[in-house]
Image 1: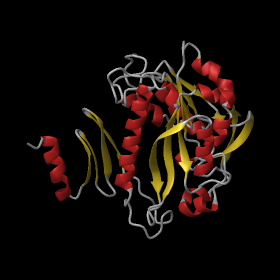
Image 2: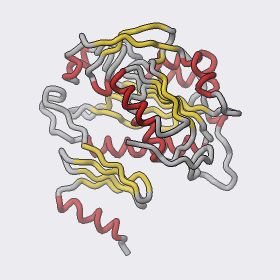
Image 3: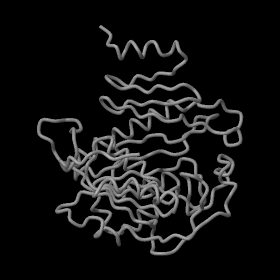
Image 4: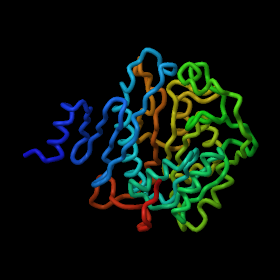
Length: 318
């Protein structure tokens, strides 16, 4: 017998709502140009405006064509990361390119209760990030960027979540109207990941850190700045580019080769953005782990429920 949940899903298309059934208790629903809702867990829905682009950014393309698949990929990626953090008993997530704390908040909603160490150099985003992080005593915020070398650099502002230390590529300029303004910048401090790890991991008896990078073309520079200490990370997540949006950023094959050479293996690849007209993926969220560092769970084959640390602090978020 069909459950009420399934009956509702079956009725929604007649109301002009797109439905993608993800299995028991989970679905992605959206109305073009409206809102997208993702059921993250029992009793919890994630709702947000479906991403569309202006005609100047994606000419001659029907708005929202890939909105539902992208929302689904985002939901599946979040679930995958949550399971990996639990299976590998991660107790500290390095959130590089934290923006306003969206990733850390997502981790909390998914059940993670370990330490979060966020890095964000843009003043406006940093202010909001600090407000969010204040709700958790074990969420550190560092007002800087990370890179290959200690330095002071100019970062572009006004590109919203796409602010970068790099110039936009010719492809990036064609794709995103926001890249037309390249004159608004500010000076920010760049540190090396290797140099901040002792402070970030202080107090953890046997740290099992995870590295998340979303730095708009600069991930491989962040990775290089870890030096030999990259070997301490049990897993990582990086935004890799199939089509380069920034000058000087590595192509996907180059980035993946560097990560694999350092001992990480791919556990998941999730499209972040696509070209509306061609369907080509622009960027992927690539999730990786060191298989040798996985923690065996007797009698279990899937992700364990709950946090890596057993901490029961209340969840945080906007």
